[in-house]
Length: 157
Image 1 (cartoon, rainbow, N blue to C red):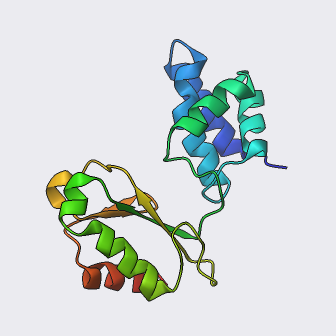
Image 2: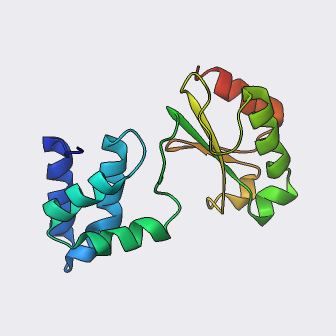
């Protein structure tokens, strides 16, 4: 059963204090909980947040299910999210994503056998001028080629 750490609970309480309504703290609190749960959120996480925030689990679940930045399944140590929206797609991001999967011998949204990587295609990450780009965990990598992307990922093994 998931339980927020003391530090995580403190962060959630600080978020609750920042806003006029508790519901406004759901997104930042989900980020805290996702990080503490190895990069993903499940029902245990939702219920722990519900108790800590004194908000019905259904309200937290609505936000969680709506936004794609919260992972509903386990991901590898490095969650590689390749933007495949229009600007990136026009600059080869879909081919880039397929190349990464081929090189790492993994299907989209699966975890590599060593537990290191999950590759996902995502919507706009807000870096259209530097397409194609990918986000690995919380860090952006821009102006990528298949070779530069793989060099970055090889350095993370």
